[in-house]
Image (cartoon, rainbow, N blue to C red; front, side, top):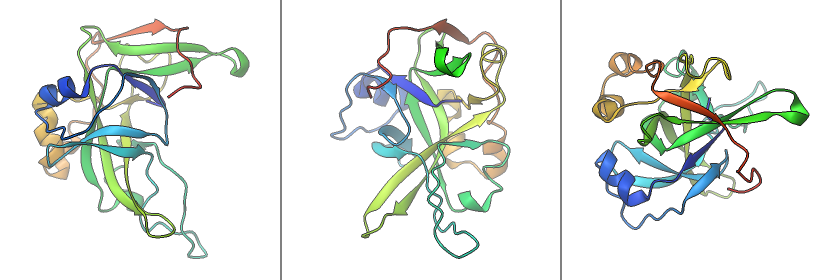
Length: 205
């Protein structure tokens, strides 16, 4: 599942690929995007904008009635439309060029870069809403959606992001829940390539 990803394609190219308006949005090459950071998101209004990666469920409270501030970075496809924590969310897409996974012991993990074999951009299915922070500041937020892995990813992780093709964007953004749910399946086997990576500064964004 995406815990770190990268976006090397320019916003202008992403906008053309997705049929989106980018406005004044600018985005440098980013080789290591982490949860909690601002990322580029494509919504149902066909506009690219920044949102914080990680959803604090709106209205979620604990047994004492206090807000639960746990951040959800990835939502499971099996439960995203059923959990009360995600009630009222909207659907969106997160463009990227690929993502990273790690295997091995804690202190000597191997990093892997996953991207499309044809080097084309990708789009993760996602959900969005707005969280009102203390002081009244409104924070647009987004979580990517995961599903079971395909054969390309299975050996390094038990989950992967739901990756959609441009022909599926409209259905995901505006279709009914049943139709959208049918899209939350692994990408076809053989579409992705997995490479060991040693040239990323993991402390950088």
